[in-house]
Image (cartoon, rainbow over all chains, first blue to last red; front, side, top):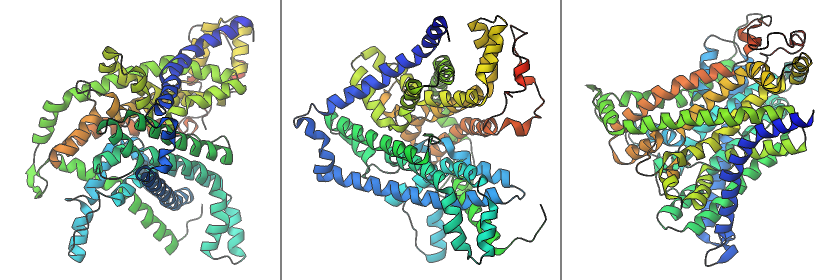
Length: 273
Length: 295
């Protein structure tokens, strides 16, 4: 590659690099600095573990994200392997429907949860008919859990299907012919084979759930997850310093989760939003 | 494949998969229906009406127009800066460009709330900029740029770009002739998929936009959150219905665009290889590097 060619390539890269540096790297650095300018100085960054209120919300956000990840991987694992293994009429339609909500915004997903489990929702109707009691759980942690599983399924199912395609069915045949029960085949052959997909899809699930905001915003401002706390600090308390410190820590956590997964599962992990 | 009777195991898994499908699709249908129901508390038997849709259209259509304007501007920006960047990343594979690639994906890994706060603490004091829709646009470009870059990069990495370009250059094609004549036509499928993704994501972006918007720059998702919080269910549903009418065709197009081209077209099809201005270059290397194979 000649010097002129190199210069041209540099010129083609420049616009993206400038926009990125000016509107992402610089602001993020500024956010970090502002997080340390409060009355407590840099120890604002420790408040997330020393202040009981912030720590509680950190713990509940991590627990919520971890359980959403686990539930999503089980659901997408079963449905994804099934769809990859079996050919039947309507299979393409089912796959399309499972991935349709891929880019639904969090607010809309919150509304979907209200449709299902809200005051006038479907689930309360069903439980009313069956048990004479209206089970309304949309406006709580359980509703949030449901919403997060809702938006995580479309993000993971394609990864699982792509990975299941590469599994060798002969390994399962062999295990079965050696007398392994179905659940042993799942535990010893299928799950280990899908592990890289589970790690990468799981990391995306976890990171997305940690940083998700729209769903909680629609359902209730009382739900004490970290993004909601940051929003409250910023708007209601006008505590810019604390909001900055907390959101920087949150960003570091989600970024680290994805980076960690990438180092485990190889370079194929794409953060898919 | 031999036809065999399905076991109980099959039916159990099918039932589970259909249940998951219902979980995702039923509320979409319910909210669409609620948007045209006279009184949702009574049910659809109260009558079908467009009253709510009309009300949303009168009160909130400015949010829809603004969102479309931002999405299209965002698309233009990501095309202008993202496609050249992807090309450079595909051409030069070294530690430095890998770091850049890694960095460019960061706005997806970092929650929108944090990015928006960072933009506000840095540029919030520039009053005119802060109040204009360009402030929202900046956030959307940051968030969607990685999708465009990755989508184009995936296609460019799957073809033998070097051979194609060498061939063109040996025949005297200039840099811009190669870029517009060979590179762009060959990564068209990546550009289409990336563009659909960018528009879809920009139209639905909320996490950043909630902090970046002002009362005069309300976007569609921000308006949605507003109606969910304060107005009756039918209005929220009607608004959601309008949003679905816009977004679902895009999502279906996206699914279509991301299915492997090889399955849709015979491999002998040369249509993807239209080298427009310099008609001579690189024909021999085409066979070695089919342009339309995507992973």
